[in-house]
Length: 254
Image 1: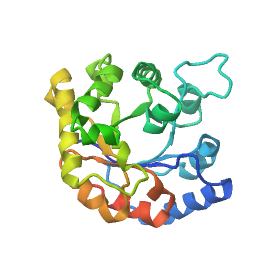
Image 2: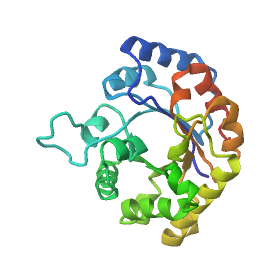
Image 3: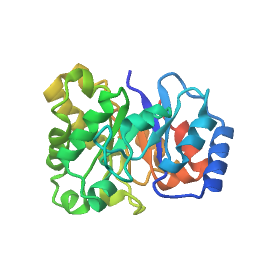
C-alpha cells in the first residue's frame, strides 16, 4: 500500500521564534497517524536542528530539507550536501521545486544528479514536476510533465524509483489561490503513474506515492486526497498555519 503523505514546505519564511512556536503548535495538535501515513516538514535549513530536536522520538513525522547540492563535498560556498543533512537526522529532501527551476535555473539534468546523490546515501527525494499556465492552456501538460520525469528520473533502476516520492505541482496554482479540481488532479496523477508503469511495470508504479501541490488547504484537502492516485499533498502557505495543516494531515487517506 502506498504511503499517504502530508508534506509541509515552509519555503523562506518565519523567524526562529515563529518556527519554534509553529512546531510546538503542530505537535500539540491531535494527529492519529497510521503506519501508512507520514508527515514531512521541510523547514528552512537554519531551523533543521530545532525541528529535529523537537520531533525526536515522534512516530511517522519527519524533517526534510528544501534542496541540496549534487556533490558530496567540495568548494561550493553556501551549499549543503545531502550527506550533511543525513548526518543530522534529515533523510527527506525536496528536489526540483518550480521555484528552484524558475529562480535558480535548475535543469532536468542537474536534478538527475541531485536525485542520484540523495538516493546514494539512502535518503528519500521528493521530486517535483508540473506545468506553467501556458502549457495547461495549450493542453500539453501531460507531455510536458512526462518529459520532466523521463529526463530526470528514467536513468534510475526499479529498486531506486520506488524510493522516490513524486510531487505534482501545477505551477499556475501555487500561491495563486487557484487549485486544480480534484478531477484534474486525478487525471494527471493517473497519467504520471502510467508513465512509470510503461517504463518500470504496473507493480512498481503502484508503489510510488504521488503528492499534489498547488494551493492545498483545509477546505479542499479531503476532496483532493480522496482521489485514487493522489497520495497526499505538498503544502506551502497553509502549512504555516498550525490549524490548517493539522486539518490537512487529518484529511489523508488511512
